[in-house]
Image (cartoon, rainbow, N blue to C red; front, side, top):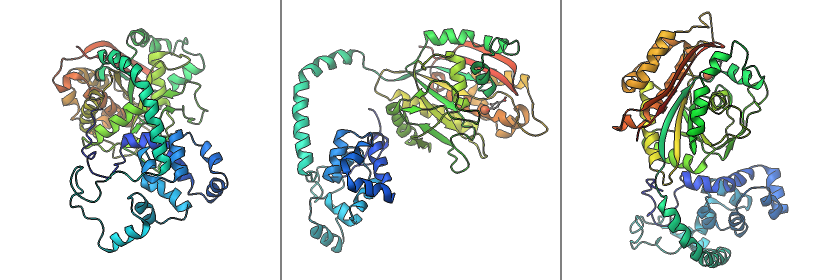
Length: 456
Ligand code: DHB
Ligand code: FE
């Protein structure tokens, strides 16, 4: 995987990055559970039974039973989480840290009294410091590794043939197209209540007939779906500006009407973790979310493009943008973020086809005496500029969205994230406009929709 990991050659050190976090998710969550007195009591009474409640790997359970912190870290544990296990056993942080060094407790304490371990010779693997030795391993870990080694040897023969076959199809992920669509809850309700054939809704759904056919021919492996959470998963307790969903799956949220009976969304943890790391390393501060319920902002566009299948036909990485509480990110920043996301996706070592969707908008205002504002001329100019001159469009300040497209029209900044990820922004060919649609009204909103294909 082509992630930038300059920290891999620091001796005796495991940096807790997105890959480690994904690997260690349940191990760390198990450790967190030990912050409750009743859980500690149950764990102490029957370790195996308690560990069986957590979907950890067998190796993680073995590492916990062996109380081998180096082993737990190897399988994704992080010391601040693991310390809850140590605390349950009555250990201090000094005892825990010392246990990973191959020294006795007294030797480690004395080293600290003498001023601590020196960085000299311990900055890079291969120097001659005192932290360059083999990892301190419990007998249980050594036995586990010996067994794993034998199993590996038995698989080498067949793996060799398989790797030759897969080498032929090796490549990177790429963005094939971007899709833009409004996400009005009433559209979801019309689908759920069987009202799509009513005269009010017929022209709106007609605008997505081509799109559904197009999706059948262009189903990607993964959709990177940019949307906003409408005070559903994130309340005023925590308001992330940009949040990426790295979980394996995401349930539809209950927005007050009961959860929509749409399929659950299957994520792509590995690609999402990769994007999180690659984008944060490009100086965008993403919030990493491992538990997320998705609202109409995400499920309605899926319905518009796929209809109502029993399962969504591809994986989806939810990417939530704060457009609810000001300050919200600028169009300029969203456009630059899209470019960072494209670089992240294209550095992923698997030949996945990825679409990026921008949702929300177009003009609408859901509040106050100005509610119901629609500006069809402005919306259509927005579509023109999004297609032909997105860099210039990205300079538009928030206040123009509010004045011209209504207070909730600000959702349109999210379209600039998807647009920024298209090839032409990085010097490639201009995208093909496969479909364009505009309709007023759906509930309080002007519905806009575009499909842009990257040209080879
Ligand atoms: C409506 C539109 C939205 O984008 C939304 O999030 C909620 C309601 C509407 O038009 O009713
Ligand atoms: Fe909305």
